[in-house]
Image 1 (tube, rainbow over the protein chains, first blue to last red):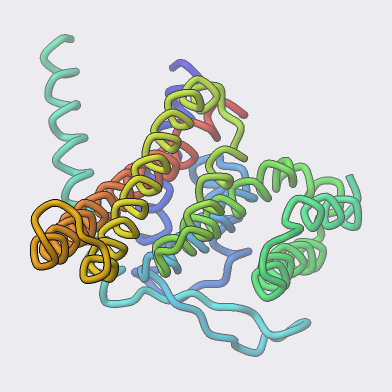
Image 2: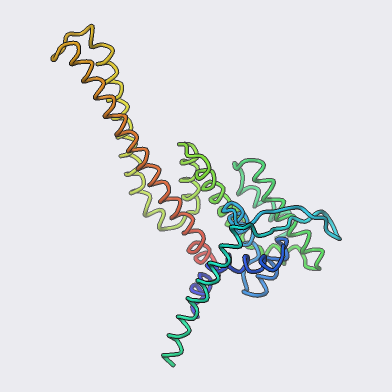
Length: 108
Length: 186
């Protein structure tokens, strides 16, 4: 696949991926970044502007928690709006990928 | 790039933002380095995985500018937001700039005209009784009052249009750096 298309696709679904990760439990940024970097091959730096954006949009909020090693960690958790947005975006994503999949299957 | 070089470049790119925001942002990246080092990675590797600090700073800056505009609608936050979007420095924004300048100039001119009409109306209202113009004293006062009311409503309409245009620009800016800009840079 064309590299630009790939990057654009990933950027578009990054927020959905973060929402999905947080829907299973709270997380701290380094953990989210390294899991996303491993899973969808994204630059880790992009996660921080994204987290700030999502916080500004009211999808996540933060709290500090002691860490076993080093200074306290900033944890992110989904807000009610974040949970609602996750459900809506997930449904949209599934419908979209099913539609694309159906077309691709038809061509084969 | 070492951790210190990365942080210096990031701080340089964020200069001018509220100190609290800068402290918040830099704390995020410091924590990233601390966690990464604890996980056994080295500074150069971590800095490379984070990406270009100047571009990250531009994105964070644009976000801060747009957020300020959404929280308080004032000429100064509008200016900040516009400059933040321009700061992203994308090619098509440069193409957009002459149009943007034209629109901003026209709006400014209209605002000046509205204020001039408002002042003229006030002069007619106050000066009416002392100055015998056409239509007599009462006519002058009513004409002044009418002129003031008309210019006030045009002014209100103009403000609405300006806010609407700014929202469009903010929408464009967010869409732009969310999807297009990172793709062009990578």
